[in-house]
Image (cartoon, rainbow, N blue to C red; front, side):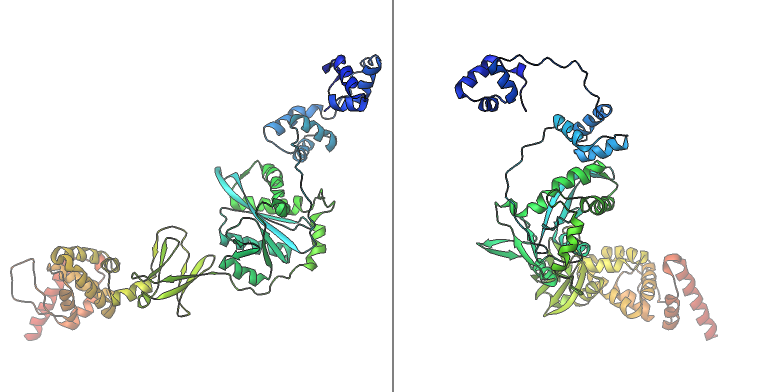
Length: 508
């Protein structure tokens, strides 16, 4: 900016002019206008100030609003124009932009080089974190951006993480919007994609390599310290922040609402504006470069990462602090995990032996019911036996307490035998037999087996008396039809009395 004449002493002007002997050089050194320097050097009198009042500006009624939008909301000039036009502003953009610069001076531009990108040859992908409010809670979201350097067409979506599964899902969505795939995709410092393993050598992650092959594109990782190679995708992040997110003051109901706004912004603002560099709309240039890109694959196998593991003695394989079960017969054998976006498969000898949904928690052990049943049959665990036994219902809980009291550490042996009886004769029959045995205070697998077979059991709650014979078939039929959970233990006394009366009647 030029300094006013009253801010510089005339003697300073004369001294500078005497030193350089040039009005142009003096004006440049003192940052004054040449006409004013010439007047001082020649001794001309300054022009009298104009008595005419300044003309009113169309910005005058909106200056306080503009200052608030600049200093408090930190809006850009183009967004301020939209805001004040809604309030009735009829002026142009240039006068507004000049006034905004007086409130917030623009930073000095950095010197960069310009790289030429042929149509359809390249797509650039990068992440950028932002802090927004989702449903009233402050959260960090990650903006995924895919930009085509030739057309400047961009796809922006938001996620809560930058994991590989999220990255691949957003690649699929972006390719679907483009209707094609760039021949080369470039990435910057994205370890989920790969890394530099040597000079001019990159090493891709196994899962991303499988995805790349399915799509057919090549991968390029930009050289360290060369940000201009990735400028097409990095530079618009400022545009995303100050036009897309600031338009809604960084407030959204949830992540889905944020992505709906991002999709609207790409379709209605970013990709249909006249780009400042190309002087064309990105959506129009995309139509020209799409035929030069790779077609979308008609059928692409779901990408996965292959991980080698060994099945542990707990018949589980480990992945990211969690453990997933396989059939116990494969314990101790080498296995291969196929890790997909939402699930994993366990292969032994090239065959899939187990499939699980990926656990999003940590330090969890996930055991499928069929693996638990197989483990109980081959090498029962006390904890697994207890869990399976207690699932038989309230009667089993009471009987388990009695087993622990009478059998102590040997209760597990009886649990295993009773569960095998339940597999062989049915749960209802075994529950009735346990209730009948508990009536006499006898807690053991032998007591349950004797009740099922119709033999007498020992009454441990009273002095020894003559055994009461029980016909096997009648007991079996009664136990099978009994709902023990809803019954009364006195039913067993009535049954025994009824059977005694029937037997006495038959003998008469």
